[in-house]
Image 1: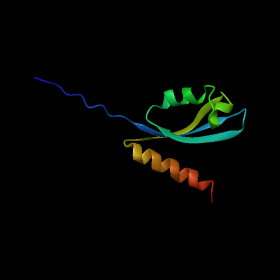
Image 2 (image 1 turned 180 degrees about the horizontal axis):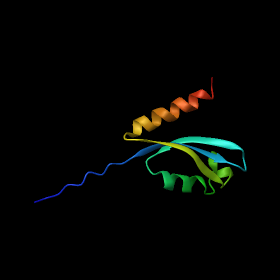
Image 3 (image 1 turned 60 degrees about the vertical axis):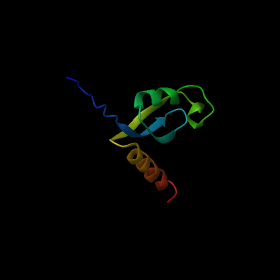
Length: 80
């Protein structure tokens, strides 16, 4: 008898905040904890300017496309 395990990956829409920069960052990922860790490393991207990013909001989705759509929707609010 064989057993099959179905891995149910979650995808996340998230908002980070940096106290040092007084800025928010909006994104999506399949690995929330790892992604936040990488945001807090020294790199050339927007979040590389500070290492105090912390999560202030997140939503879970079953599909990556849904998390991405939510990210695009919220980012569009800044252009209104």
